[in-house]
Image (cartoon, rainbow, N blue to C red):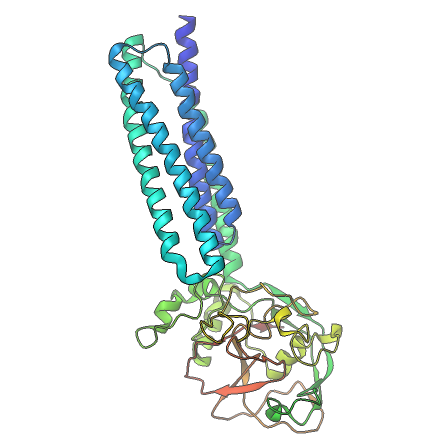
Length: 420
């Protein structure tokens, strides 16, 4: 009787451990969904831990059954061992496929078909092994219970398992909610007001600086500006549309897609609707920056180190995704990249040079050499200004100015926001 009770306890804990292993898979999935695939290491760790626990649990059940099998159960024993082997082979092939995918993407992104094939074959092999294992273990347990003539009712263990799962789900829900809140409202950086020289301060520049002259002194008040360009995840949370839906059938070229990628293919008018909804949600007063505010922040504000070319450096590769580094290096395959992957500028703001260009609030206008205080631009015009250059520029210079009709969209124009 003591032996039977011991077995009952063991099986009870096996059930608990099996539920825990499944919880790790669910938790990994939740983290992946909440982070937009950015916490891949944590997801993989959860999956590995869940797999280890699951396999350990299966092994424990096997040990429990060993030596207690009738001739009928010996057949099941052989099937369990074969299933375990196939499951192990599936894990190896899956790991090999993952390795191939990493190598293929590192060498040439067009090799993804090889990676997909390797991962798919490993995944199929793994699933077949898992299904066979489950199909072998469950009948074996049923036979074992019948032989012992005892009904195994590990109520205490099931209660603990349910409580544990509830705790994990609650923590996961809190995590997801926090991530979603962060996705909706952009992280802001305070920019202390001051006076700076606006325009093309690079005396050697003769090609891109004609619209940025004459240089002139500008004073701006303090404000907050988003640390990153507004992402596709933030856009979807507010507007409910993905980048594919935003582009529609009229434009099928992808310039980078994912929750952490900057939102693009949005007109100035589209951005106003986004701001309206965001302000209604948060109760704040977000808006687009003026050109003066944008350039002041891009140049580092009161912390400026007087870089002449780009935001945070005079080396484009340090701080910007440009035509030289955003594709294959030959001017082809150009696209945006997830925000915040380059070095920030002096204020801790990312991607103000390159990646995607950014809408400003004002109409385009011609500079004058007179000093100005918080210039807002003209009251009328035909094109709204955008700044920062993009991944399609060889030189996304900090002072380069461009404009586009407010109802037009481009694959290389996104935005960031400010508020008082």
